[in-house]
Length: 229
Ligand SMILES: [Zn+2]
Image (cartoon, rainbow, N blue to C red; front, side):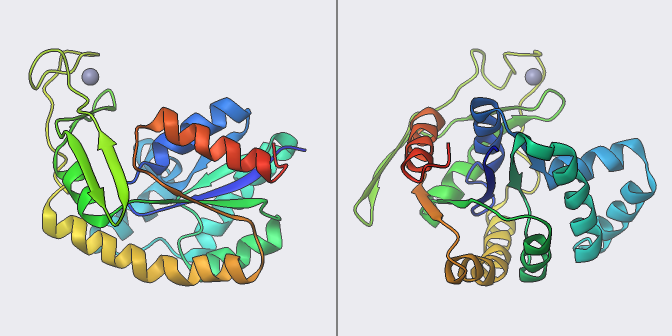
């Protein structure tokens, strides 16, 4: 039986990157609710239209719908194991998930908020091919933690290496929008984190202060320590 994981952490910390890397490395299924919803919108399905309506109104897709989507994917993953990214987003979702499956561990990615914002502001993306670059060069000690992030530049300025298209800032990567997103995240995630802690689910907190390859090694080390892989 393979491992069943949840990845948590503030927006912009890199949950998508880490869940993708871990799913490949451990041979488990990545279940990203963001990816699923985007795909449904793209297909124009009934669910996709509902998601669009909520996006327009700035409201969250109702818990019961999210739970049903995730439950279906978990059943499909079967004995392969999985890593959940973007779910549970509310305490109600966490409680519903408990009735579906037993989670082996929570991976909680943390990062100093100012560093997080700095990195998001200097991120350059190419939507069409999904490439992400970063022009920031961080080497800073915050609260006793040393953060080192060398820049991730394209070979030609503002041009994507993969497809040759222009690199842009994501429209929601604005200081105010980011701060608001972080605030909402904190409010919603606190009860979820407390919930898993009080239920004794192994809680792996990892400070993301280096590039992904180093952080992935740390996560794998902790999972081995817990005899989960
Ligand atoms: Zn590209």
